[in-house]
Length: 400
Image 1 (cartoon, helix red, strand yellow):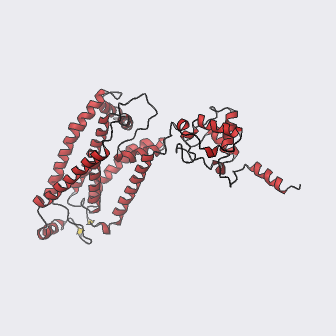
Image 2 (image 1 turned 60 degrees about the vertical axis):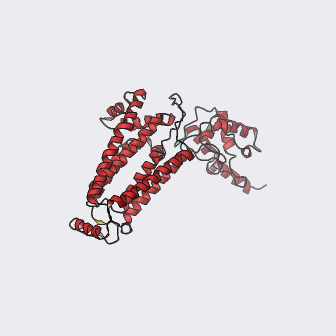
Image 3 (image 1 turned 90 degrees about the vertical axis):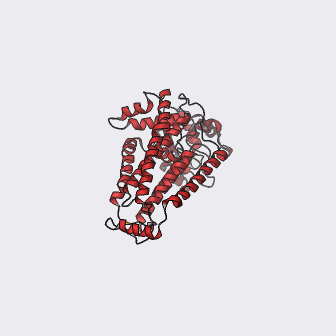
């Protein structure tokens, strides 16, 4: 809970600084140190998750090592530095303990010290009033005149506010820990269990979803280039937009940027909570086909339902909302695909669906397709092949 609150507070503070224009002249260095504090805070959160050393931590660390290995030239060296060898072992845990307890806290203390020093030296950002323009030539004089008229001393006024807010956060962390309990550890990790879906902590869920949706060919370029571009943009911001309006009311692009980022991260986090791309590996054995899909069916169609379960189709496809969501729901599949299309899809696969041509006998394929053809509303006719439709129209117009 401490790491969750810590990451949330840093992000909220950065959004506030961005919207209030507090990164502009003369506080460029303060913003840069803040960006470094964000990165170090995320590092603190990641190493803390690894120290739980449960199933999620083990496989999450494996994913992190896989990402690090893709860095050109220094990738293998970075993995060896991270893991202490070619595999995740006891020395790995020791290294992350040292990072989490000594190295990263030391960096945090140093950066926080520099950050506060810059605040004391330059002063707290004034309230961003519309029309109050930042100009390098005149800002310092205008700021000193403003603080002389309306300013309050940092000690004790601002310090007391910080103390009260810090106390509130500590109480909130304690309440969450008591009410919701700790998150993990979830038991000793077992590398032999390959049917696992490791999930990171809340603040990294968006990245988990993004990696799940990326095509394999785009993973490495985006993982290597995306973070670098994001960090460069954040570091360059005060030098590119160091003057001008501070008020968010007159900076619509800044507001739109925050909204777009918030919607994107929120959507990805929501998707990661449900993980629709992951098959429900036990659906074929624990979630039987609903009875309404079996009533009134022929022996061949019932046999197809057995094939549907035995070949674990239910793991990726839902019926009546039960089953996996990796593939499309099949409640009305007969309205969308004809018999020939169903046969081709089952045998050849397509998209993220594997080909089952070598895993099904002709009899099983026939039975499965017969069952799939029954999956449509009772008041709607299933899709027809062109030849079937032509024969049907011929029978309807032919004289009796």
